[in-house]
Amino acid sequence: MISGRGSNLAALIEACANSDYPATITKVISDRADAGGLAVAAAAGIETVAIERKQFTSKAAHEAKILEELATSRPDLICLAGYMRILSLNFVRQYEGKILNIHPSLLPKFPGLNTHQRALQAGDKRHGCTVHFVDAELDSGPIVASASLEIDPADDENTLSRRVLKLEHVLYPAAICKVLAKVD
Ligand code: GRF
Image (cartoon, rainbow, N blue to C red; front, side):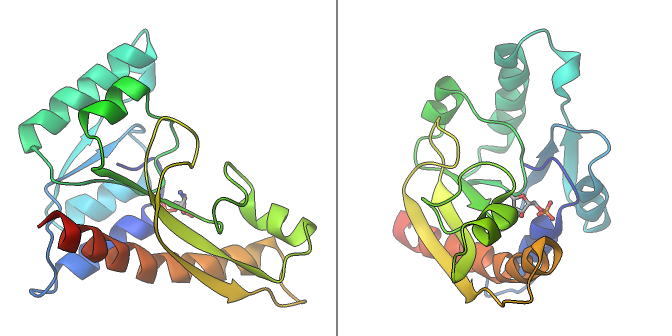
């Protein structure tokens, strides 16, 4: 599930193209019809669905439509890759232990937005990204794996976000393997 440019999605698509990789992507769901990631998925021949929040009168109705869409795929895992909404407890319960998210900080540090700026402001020496199971709180839930780098004194928000994003693209496919190895 995505909301934006889909660079993590692209990394997952690339991983799944390897015949040794233990997963395939059956569907990409976006809450924005203009998400760049939808074109990335379509170019790879993956079914895409845009389900925009504004088409629904409530969060519950929006999620009900997404759940309906998911039910047709019966996914073993739902990977949030830049999906910018908090899922309700009702949603999470229906896929307990099957929803993953990638977050650009070393959780539990810096849940939420502007993580790179906050790491710089805090004067942290290290920063990175985390893959975690999703619960109904923001960027919460058990951690699966993380990857970190040393913050360079010359780093600004842009360089740091680029460097962490590269780590994300390696971490997410690896973390999914780790989870699937335990599921099987
Ligand atoms: C990534 O930094 C991810 O960690 C965060 O949102 C961003 C999505 O980027 N949850 P992309 O759409 O995968 O390029």
